[in-house]
Amino acid sequence: MERDHDSWQARLPAELQAHVFWPVRVESHHDDGVPASKWRGYDALGQLCYYRHHYAQWDYSFDDEDEPCMRMLRSESFEAWRCLNGQWLRRVQAVEGPGQCGSGAHDGGFEVVPPQQIPRL
Image 1 (cartoon, rainbow, N blue to C red):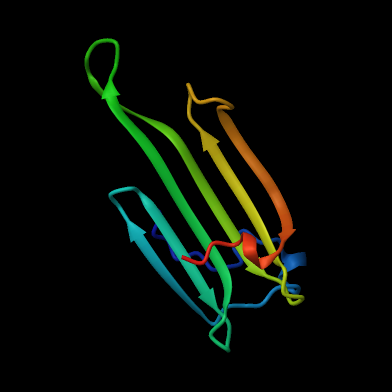
Image 2 (cartoon, one colour; image 1 turned 180 degrees about the vertical axis):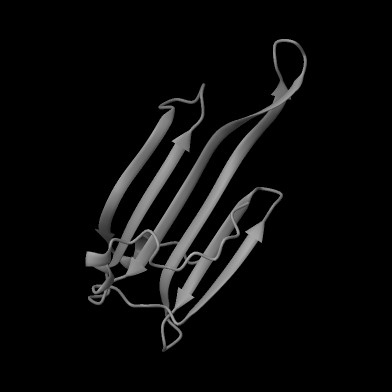
């Protein structure tokens, strides 16, 4: 699973960085069994100001020749930054594997959302 310690602004365009709180501390949690990763960033007052998660779900099965194989069912990357006005800027990117309804890559782009739409756990 992804364990690189990218900085919180790696996927945030430079022109938007002045409009969000900058974390002074970032925690990360990884579960290789799923595989999934989660990052939380906190400002100088200890309040959540950055959130990111990534997961992938795989199907283990057999191909037409009864050989073991893996295929990705879905994956999601979710990233959000708390704006100076209290709203959140988020971006959700998802991939649905073959055979899934609506299969393919989806990118919601950057959108401003209320705090209630940001995961806390």
